[in-house]
Amino acid sequence: MLPPSPGALLALALFAGAAQAAEAPPIPRCAATPRIDVAPDSSGQASEVCVSPNETTTFVFDSRLAAGAVEVQPEGRLADWTPGKEGLTLHVIPRGDFLPGERVKVTVRFADGEAPAGATFWLVGHAARRAQRVEVFRKPRPADVLNREKVEAQAEARQCQEDRARLLAERKEPGGLMGAAWLEREKAVESKDIWYDLEPHPANALRTEQARSYSQPKGVTLPGGMAVRLQLLNPGAEPWTAAGAVLKDLTGAEVELSAWQESAIAPGALGFVVMGAEREPGQLACPCTLKLWEEQGPRTVTLGNVTFPAGEQAGRKGAARE
Image (cartoon, rainbow, N blue to C red; front, side, top):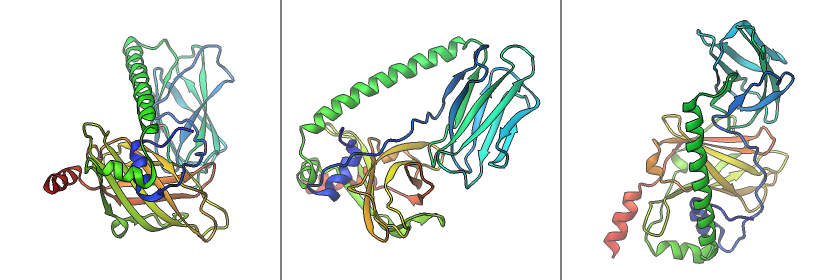
């Protein structure tokens, strides 16, 4: 199993001691901006698109939709589905009780009568990782889209290479308390208690008993990182395991976090969950909203007013001690 990212390792070292990372549960692949080609011979085929409760997903078409040409099955599971005024967009919003893994079929018809006459999509529920914008191409993709895809593919390849180099480097460094001591050599770790300032959502499945955030500014030998450590109480009748987490800032920008816990939180018990990402908190417009979800289950934890220590403070304090 690959070790957590440096952002998660930052909090893991402070929390886990000598504990070893457990195998993380699988997370469905949900693209934030998927692109779908609708071919003339694609009748009967349906693409899957991730959606989340009370969150808008916008379909953008290169051909106009016919008036009244949107069919939703089963009915009643979407709070709204509204075509744009020009007939080139469709906005869908699942109901607040839309469940992870739940599926709704959406069929559209195009106005010009050419093949393909329509397109079908499966909206698949996910607690947080919805597709924000879905680009649907009925005609050959224009050059600017192809160029954009090329740039994105190259960036993804570079990221994979960087991740591989980072993971190899992490395997050579100590973990647990020794790892915390190793990070402290650069005086780069800053943390603060955020429990008193949190704004828990009333529908949270677990209660937050402790909360601490961590920041690690980018340095010569360390990448920038951020992490959050939560202690949660499970009042339910079933164990709870975090499958993933997302941090959303005031502008709506989202950052996916790696989530780790030593074991499932048993009913009536306390447990720790650590989340992190290789990204400096200063790049986000916080206070932010943190959302955790379980695999194929409706129980989520949403916390507002999440903040991080300023990286500059860690640097100033470190300089004062030298």
